[in-house]
Amino acid sequence: MQETSSLITPERLDGTNYVEWSLNARNKIRGRKRWGYISGTKAAPSNKKSEEYEEWEDENCLVKSWLLDAMTKDIRSLFLRLSTAKEIWEAVKNTYSVDQDASKAYQLHCEVFSVRQNGGSVISYFGKLQKIWQELDDIDACIMECANDIAIYTTKVNSEWVYKFLAGLDPHLDGVRGRVLSTKPLPDIQAAYAIVCSKANRQDAMLGENIGEGTVMASRKMTISKKDQKCTHCNGTGHTVDTCFRLHGYPEWHPKGKKASHKEASSDPKANLATTLAFTAKSEHPYSGEDWQW
Image (cartoon, rainbow, N blue to C red):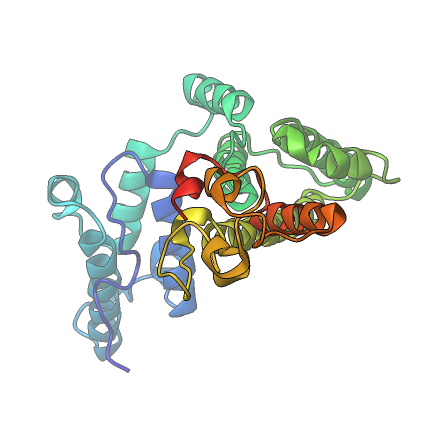
C-alpha cells in the first residue's frame, strides 16, 4: 500500500487546534503501526551504517512527513529541522498544549455554561458540548488507580454532563427532560442523548406531517376559491354551472330576479324559498355585487 504524507488530517495544525490535531494524528499513526517512532519505543539502532538503521531512518522520515505535512506553512517552519518524529511531537506538545492551563480551563467551563440548543438540532448542540468536554478531559487529566474511586468519579462526572445537557435543551423537550431525570439510576450521557434525540426526531416528523396537511388544506381552499371558478354554461367567472343563475333562474333577492315575470317564477312560495336556499348553500356565502352580473 502506498503511503501518503497527508493521511493524518485534512485540517492542518494552525496553533489553535492542537487537541483535535493530536488526537487525530495519534489514531492515524497508531493505525499504521508506527507509534513507536513517536513514543520512543522504536529507538534508532546504534550502528548508523547498518541496514537496520537505514530502515529505521526511512520509517522515521515517513512519520516526520506525516506530522509536518499536517501543519500550516508557518507552523511547519518551526519544526522542520528537528531530526526525529519524536522530537517534533514533543516540541509541538510543549508549544501548543494547554495542560494545566487555568485560563484555558476557565474559558472552556464558561463555554459549557453558555452553550444551549437555541432552536438548533439536538445533534449539533450535543456535538458542541462533547467537543468542550473532550478538551477539558485533556486539561484536567485525573489519574486514579483504585477501581472504586474511578467508578465513583466517573458516575459523578457523567451526572454533571447529563444535567448540563438537559438544562440547555429547548422548552419543547421538557417532557423528555423530565423522563430522563426520573430514570433511576440516571442514564449515562450517551444513553440520555439517544433518548432525547429520538424524541426530537419524532416531534420533527409530526411537525412535518402537520405542515403537509396544512399545505393540502390550503391548496384545496385555493382550488375552490371564487376567483378560480368558471361556469361552463355562461363562461362567467366567480361561480360554477351548479349555481349559474342564467341556467337555473335568478333568486328573489337578486336584482334580475325582481324584474323577472311572475310566470317564470314558481307559484309555490315554498319552492321559491327552497331554490333560494339551495343556491345560497352551494355558493357557500352571500353574493356580493360582483355576483349580480351573472
